Length: 425
View 1 (cartoon, one colour):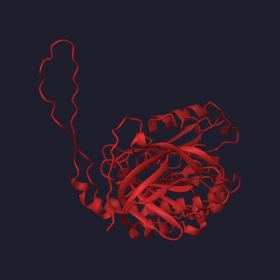
View 2 (view 1 turned 30 degrees about the horizontal axis):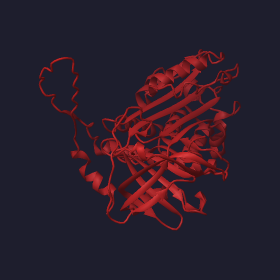
View 3 (view 1 turned 90 degrees about the vertical axis):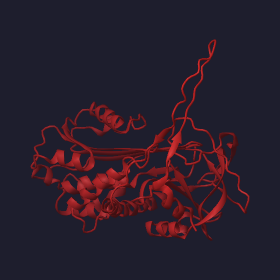
View 4 (view 1 turned 90 degrees about the horizontal axis):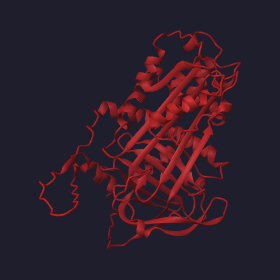
């Protein structure tokens, strides 16, 4: 029986009670009334129809993420990380605004199939509502922005309001010919995600006299481990990078009982984040001598692996990870079939203006992945929890390139995924 099955059965009953007592002494101590425990109330569960809609668009964004990773893996030698959900949402916005062959290309690249723009927008809206606060200690912040030339006249007068409603997206007309636009847009992204980690996402060089439309998307995930690693057990250890170089990295160690799968090509471990374990992290590492291509790394196989796990006692040795990955998605998405959207001669975003003339100049995506003893992107201090295991224990040593997937198990939607070719570049 898997731990995942056990967790889903108790998660709705989980209640975390905290009690904090501080004593300051200066002369005689005056008795004080005891501090009552503070109950942390978890967010209400969405209805099943909302979950089903989020799963529908989540399946599409997951498949998109695996396709993009397969293309990146052919050439990338450094670590890389992306948010397939964030990219899919940007394509959903572009798809709504597009017509003719441009729309067909976006649909093909994203994998929207026969979903209408209204269905895509509705599913994405439900996905945002589900992801926004999965539990009381997990923070997920999204920023979707579209900027058009300042003299753009909308055919649909309420288009900006509609996108703000569906995607919580910034949709406005500004001067795209001045490099000063980069700072204003970066400031907006920083405010939406409550972090400076995306502060230089758009560059002054992106803005020239030919810039006609800019899209940016960013996602920040901050989540503590259900049971953090003990910092005193973190020691330097060897990690062999994708290029074959052996380097010392801080290697964390934890004993735990969790969902686990091992076969001839890989080891697969499921880890829980937050208070409830609804947000999960899967780590997948090829067996020595095997490549990622030997695993069959697809969305379909990932779902099969989830259902094939058994509970196991593990000693997990995992490096601390700090990766910042920034890239223009133009080449990847053009190769996937949406080259018309970037071509000034063929792009058709006439839903916005009623005529051709707009094309995608920049579609930049930035992801930051930081993993340490406390969790994913966590800054606050937490006490370490040690687990003693008495039965047979399997060691999983992440001392060579491995895959990380962070996802919301309620909709099975991947929030962030990547390959750690070098954990500390």
